[in-house]
Structures are given as structure tokens and as C-alpha cells.
Image 1 (cartoon, rainbow, N blue to C red):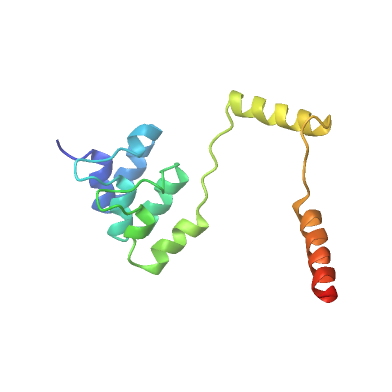
Image 2: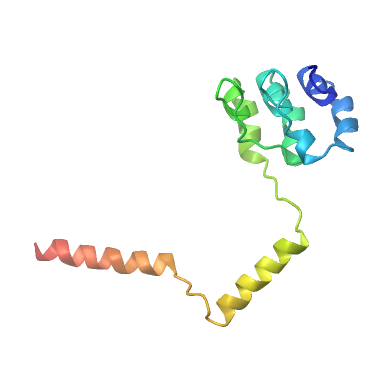
Amino acid sequence: QEPSALYNACRNNDIEQVKTLLTNTSLEQLNRIEPNGSTALHAASYWSHGEIVKLLLEQGADRWIKNRYNMTPYEEAELSHIKEIFHKTNYIPPLSTSTVHAYVKLLHAIKNELLPVVDLRQNMKSKIVRHQSNTQNE
């Protein structure tokens, strides 16, 4: 089986072709594991094609898929400026109807005190105070 056109464009640093292909690429196709065991993001990372890495991440490429060498695209990046792109680029999936409904239900439960909310900062402060008083008494 041959690698996809997207994989080849990413490997060969063909930015214009990548942009064109991304207009009609599903998330499943974007994260396709190619015959060599890697994704398009693995290829762009490995070959240090920073602009393509950024494009793929912005489109929602999965940065956690491991290839046949048990490496993520981040781990495949040899240059620090490529790794930095992973740190700077965040993908937030578009809100779907089900996601919005889930948020609304969560907010409703919190507002109506149907779901206990713990202020971790407050909880931590009380633990520190207790710990300090216990150590002073020893």
C-alpha cells in the first residue's frame, strides 16, 4: 500500500499541496497511520518541516499517536524549534451540540449545588496550616 498524498506532501515539505489537501481532509484521514507505521505529523516532525507541523496541529492532528518505533510526533522531532511548535500550538475541537449540552448540564449541576465543587486552593491552604501546626508541636 502506498502512503497518502498528504503524507507525501508533509514529508516533502510541499506546503501548498498540504494546504490544498487539508481543505478536504477528515480528522480520520489526517491521523491515518501510513504503511510505514507513521502519520503525516510524524513525517513533518521528523523532517523538521515546522510550518507543516503547525498547520497539522492547528487542523487537529493527534500529537499522541505512536508510530511503529513507539514514538509520538513530538518525540520524532530532533530540533528544538520543532518541539517548541508543539508547546505553542493548541487545538481546541469545535463545539458540537453534544459538547454544549454536556457543559450546560455541568454548569446547571454546579449552580444548583447538585455537584460538590472543591476549591483545591482552599483545601491545600488548610492542609498546609494543619501540617505547620503539627510540625511545630513535635
